[in-house]
Length: 174
Image (cartoon, rainbow, N blue to C red; front, side, top):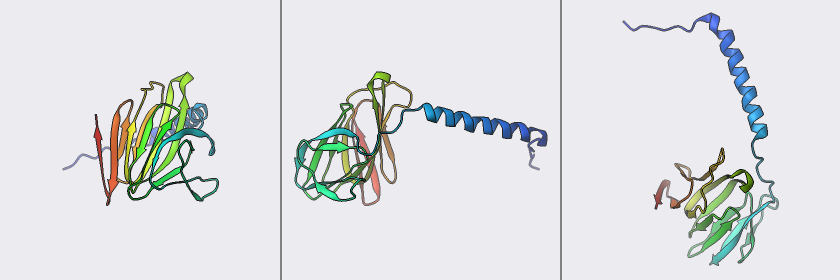
């Protein structure tokens, strides 16, 4: 016979109060957290462009051709064609290299060197991206992640490659 443990009903009000307090504390912490960059913030530059590269900005919704030294903006979607690749130097000294037939979206970018905080999330929809994470940041909430539909790769300071092709994801790191 299986023993069944029941939750004492007299603890329910206490649990509800604690859960509500936790939610209020989480909201207060979120208000003190670094604010995500505005949509048009310049977060880097394209340092290499080979082949046909386009960037789509949320403010316009239109894809435009990328040229050397163009700005990389928060929330940009970068797409590469066949035999095309690009390299972007972000303002936190990280380098993203986007391979051919790829699509990446910069979904989070917080950089505050005075507080030793960096939080970058790149969504790799398809293709491949290499990341050279220039500096390790120890501030609370610091991260550098590349998300694919099936995996998340994260680093604090290293060089790694992530790919997502035909529904499968993978990662290599040094």
